[in-house]
Image 1 (cartoon, rainbow, N blue to C red):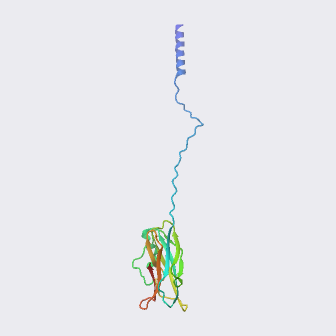
Image 2: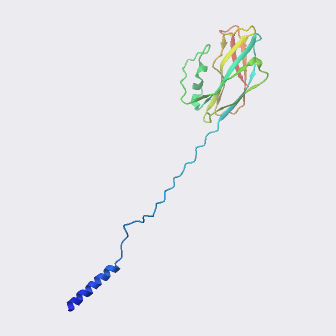
Image 3: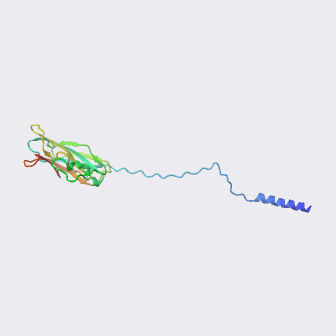
Length: 205
């Protein structure tokens, strides 16, 4: 009888110990819990460079008396790289009366050419502005004002031939961003003792 009572006491102790034992962490998660997404930093927008602009004022110099008109077509060429000062206007180094000994390499960067403007030098009365000529902001390494074509007419209506620098004449070359306005004088000079009859001459003012 005493042995049965002892067994009952031990069973009660074991039962009480099981009820009071600490419980471990739960393996289940709250189905309603949600994770907070990590915010992604947005990089600031890249600033677009402001357009580069230049202005030229043109005046007429000497024109022979037997010439009725001298039409000059002008264009500004902007460069993206300083090393392309020259390669972007390769045509100005070749042509009649101006052989190029060393070939000019093609440009490595981009060249930006403005719209052409044509002036009649005989019709100019004082200076004539070419207006504000612009290019995208990355073309700040330099620029050149180029006379792409020069044609002249005699007073009798015939076309003048034998003009030196009648195509691809560098009027002015500027390194770096333009500061302007720039002023140039364009002339047509006559010669009797040279392989050409006339020479298109430019002067920086």
